[in-house]
Length: 469
Ligand code: SF4
Image (cartoon, rainbow, N blue to C red; front, side, top):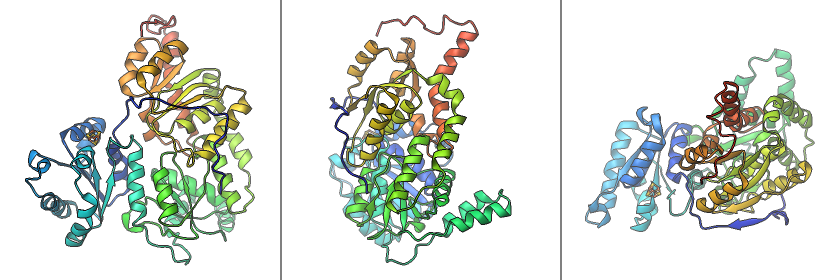
């Protein structure tokens, strides 16, 4: 287990919370794709509907497995019966889509009118015969990716109890066998011999695309660590068994409620590790899991060096450049740590919410990285104020601002290159092999500037920055 101490020399500040981010109900966009037999019902108003319709872009034309239960005047003034209305909708969903689980997403309005979703769900579940999971992923309490956290925390309650029997790992094995099929038979046998393990069960939590799941399983399997299951799984019916004696480890920095639920309610043991983002993070993540299971990691150092070597072309481009994270998705600390390792200077890490206990190992790695690279520790600003941040950027003139769409074009027009932060949430950024994708995103504005310069369109690249912010 990791120490839950936060390094002393990092400075934390807290501002007004006046910042742009996506509403957490946006998590339905990736979760309905991940859990293939689910249906998400967002119980809210037209405001929520407009947001989803616009934010999710072309996805809405692909008959997604989510819908809005739009509240009307009658619902809000309690003239209509909430239970009857929701039952009508859920029966319709069952008839049309026949999902294995319906997830109700509570919104600001259901909070304010105190609609008792948690009270209604078990009764309705019994009547229609489909599990109903309730997650309060509203904009009053949470930001963007924390929506996934509320859904996974609610789902953790539905995981079967671990009874000490050997967990079922067939699904992961099959996925890994698929990935290995290109290897010659001899190499495959060597690999399979390594895969016998005797450690306690390990369940990983965090929603990742299935190929990234297989990659991380495979990395751990190389160290003779068998992953017993993931929360969430591809299918709701295959949720992993959790309970006393099961070790759990997160793959994303925004899952602190899920971690707490697994520890407190399900009595699992949490492995507090840095997150597998960037080759440095991935190595530290695997090493931490190995150390908990008393396993000596094999060949990790060389693997990390190999990846750094393959990133040289990008690193030459970013080295010495400065970056400013405005903060809206909670991935900021891990990304900043990776970029500092790449030789960048991070002025500020804005972040909506910082759980210092859950992120302790990541913060320690950030500090270690700054010391090793000889750079100043960035300031970490929780609940940032976008107005103040723009003022600070005006002073600092960073080479790159990682920010939301609201500020991207205005900043570009003022000579500050920007990268849209939401892309980091949807791109594949975990594990050794995906480090390239992170740098691909980070360097895109820098490469664009270079090619515009090469074209001789210097007038479009604002070299002499205009200070009209
Ligand atoms: S912030 Fe509240 S009202 Fe706005 S979209 Fe999110 S849940 Fe709906």
